[in-house]
Image 1 (cartoon, helix red, strand yellow):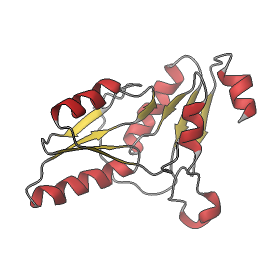
Image 2 (cartoon, one colour):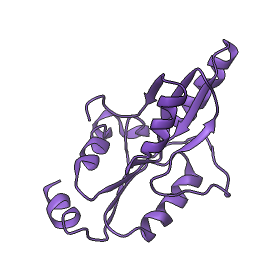
Image 3 (cartoon, one colour):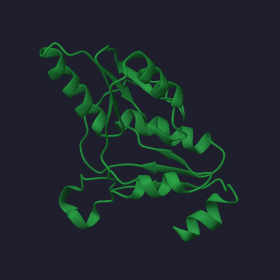
Image 4 (cartoon, one colour):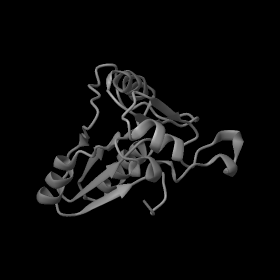
Length: 168
């Protein structure tokens, strides 16, 4: 981390870091390969952009966006099967959150592999008469604060679903 902070982030070098094995899913590698702290650590590094795409389509687009983005970028990826959420027309932009479903009772903010779980939860809630807005957040830093403020203003009830520790 010291090398990343001092040698890459502080001077804003155009370095891209891929953190695989992010979060809980590790396949056959097991618990020793789970990296829950990576998002908190990289978010705390000055000048670091932090991306956590939801599926293979968005990961591909995030890689190209990271390459075009000046300065350091941390891209968290997983090494497991994930449901496809986006099609090739998905307009991935660094710093943008995406409303995948509208709802007026609750807003669910999710990132990376938890976005598919948030969509499934919204379906289950709808069966109970609860309409949930689902917002996918592939850029954790810089955060799309406008989308958070809009959900807070429009709905007032927000939960986050993250593959990560509550600390950080």
